[in-house]
Amino acid sequence: MNHIERNYRALLSVALVLNSQRDMRSLWEAITVEITKAIPWARASITLYDPQIDAFQFYVLATTVPQVALGRDAVVPRHGSGMGWVYEHKTLHIRPDLKNEQVFPEDKLYVQEGLGRMINLPLLVKGQCLGILNIGTRESGVPDPGDIEFLTQVGMQIAYAIDRYTREVQRLLG
Image (cartoon, rainbow, N blue to C red):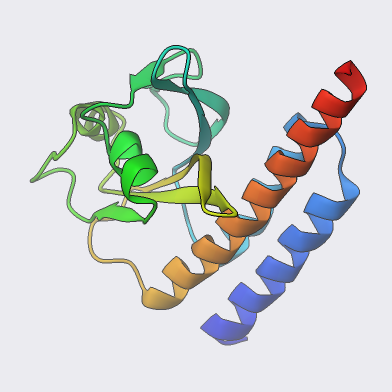
């Protein structure tokens, strides 16, 4: 199976997962399994922006690293962070060589975890950024453009799922 076909199949699986799961924890577990089929990652998370504290909080986090330096309870400030940069610019940001160049304060923590590259992608719905999809790998280097396209599509589907979930919760709460 070639790279494009593998990514396409994984993307279809992500779409099926997003449309079949209702519990966000099992949803994330299923999505990370599908992402793994296309891209080897060591850290995958979704952070959501909280305007009341002007920071990002981890919504979900999956990792294969033995020591987590930036855990699920961490709060990452918007100002000066990679997540904040992505949120403000509404475009992805790639740091291909974390070991030799830390651009944002959280990059030092990623290096402590053994990561070589970090990709942050905005979760956009109708031009509004809800949060960030964060994918870290042990390898350094510029990622394959096909992998970035795949992650962009996954991020778009996750953003719409979060938006649907949020609207449904708001509707139920009245």
